[in-house]
Image 1: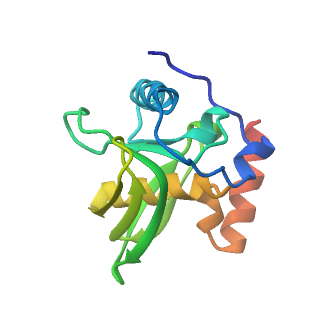
Image 2 (image 1 turned 90 degrees about the vertical axis):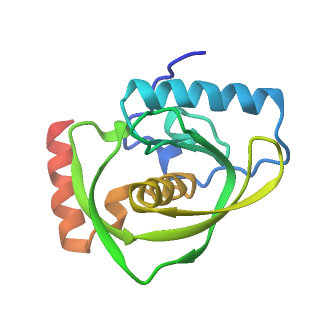
Length: 164
């Protein structure tokens, strides 16, 4: 497969909601394989298709220590979120050199179309939950820093603009 190039923030495609997938095809599986190669080359624990310029609701997540347990998701949506939150340092290859502590639910239940084309439902916890939520944000045209307070986001974006 192939390692793809990341869009650079503030590319407007990073701010656009990705299109739904109607069915899982060979082309979709090839995109997922490229996404896993790209995610592993970062190295990272998740990747959404819009990050590499593909306007489809596809994501991959692998928060395993062995880096061989990637989950492929199409059209993922969060059904339930825990009331407990955790704070994790998040970043994106679309905005290199920048990160921020983001609070997200510790556990989420997600419905998605799986690699076999069936609707699946899975509970994600810990780093898996953080990553899947981060990827769903990308699919909805949001960046991790959008979750910061207005003041913190303004400071973050000023720093990011200086780095460009």
